[in-house]
Length: 88
Image (cartoon, rainbow, N blue to C red; front, side):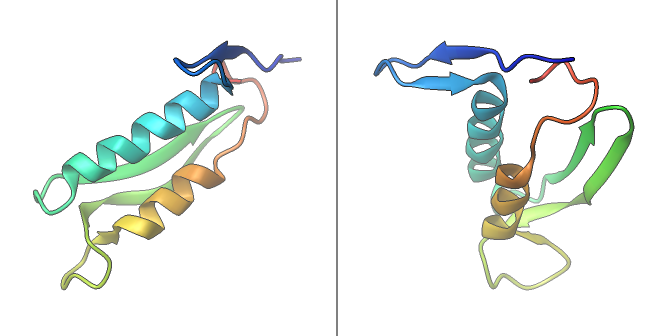
């Protein structure tokens, strides 16, 4: 069994560890945008699941084989604790 660990941000709002990780991933994607650096998403619980393969992250509508920024962030936001994970 797992428990949802919570922490307060600088404004006193409660966030779970997963919410902190998601916020960090969204900020990281913003920094990667347009730089040609590849990013992907794999979640780990009882099994590993590849949600997005490695590709550069760029603005929505950019040309090429990329992850559009909004789609990348949507996958990040869709992650949920599951199985035996330490990220609860």
